Image (cartoon, rainbow, N blue to C red):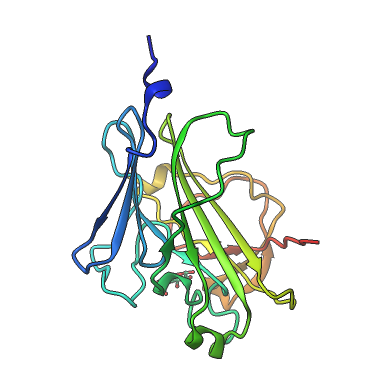
Length: 227
Ligand SMILES: O=P(O)(O)OC[C@H]1O[C@@H](O)[C@H](O)[C@@H](O)[C@@H]1O
């Protein structure tokens, strides 16, 4: 009768264990067998499996899993800087840090009608972070897995002391694909991008979907204004 989602215990479907470096990792499960694994190292989603148990994210065979090295794979969080567009280390420091779990997270929004298992992770700056990036922030990352296996990440960056600052941010998602020649990315037409393979020269994406016949390195430019 398909009642499994109604009786599914979402708290019990969230399991916290340790990886082999002693860092906590969280596994979220859906009633039909999808799962997501999130590490406190970098607040990084390191695995996302569908109901058939197939891994949807790529992790490099050369990835180093020892903090503070960033793990090349899954969904690294780039913050407070994307790439090398600033004075910080490449992609900022968030992906190198050990995040914490918020044991009393705010509830899911009432508009969110689908039951989900979720975890809220927090990152606050250390003394050392404040020396190289002197801004008081709290980064809340909510990772949720819906009953149908879909994964959502919501990031909220709070300015703690009201002094303005700017930052850049990205989910540097590594998707696993079986045949790159079959991949098309649609919906970026007309957006400007910086071409990493052409000294970050600025171009405008034209007409068709992006396909991959050789190496591609495009940073699409979005600007979000928050009042
Ligand atoms: O090697 P990192 O620091 O994990 O960054 C991953 C990649 O990030 C991309 O944004 C860069 O264009 C690549 O050159 C880089 O390899």
